[in-house]
Image (tube, rainbow, N blue to C red):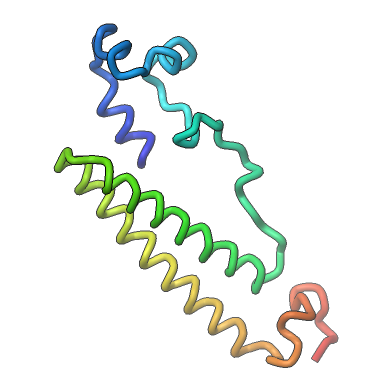
Length: 131
């Protein structure tokens, strides 16, 4: 959604606007196409997606990812004054909060169903005989 928002904001830029906004290096490589990258220009990679196949580990990772996204949206809101952009970012931020809460509920359900003495020591998907 952020890529779409950036595209909508940049698709009709003139060459002068592109240069004035410091967007010229990006334009040379990508025109106004969406190229996922961090604010520092580091391209997105699948290495950012974390999955271990362990319910406890993966739910904690998911919760952390939601909090990192929320913090990014908070930072964007501190910098942006366009009401249309702010509305989109506020919606996305609220969605991250809900996702965090649902992952937290999933974590509680998972730990309630596991042997609480062992839920950090086993992976129930593989260690089925550990009780």
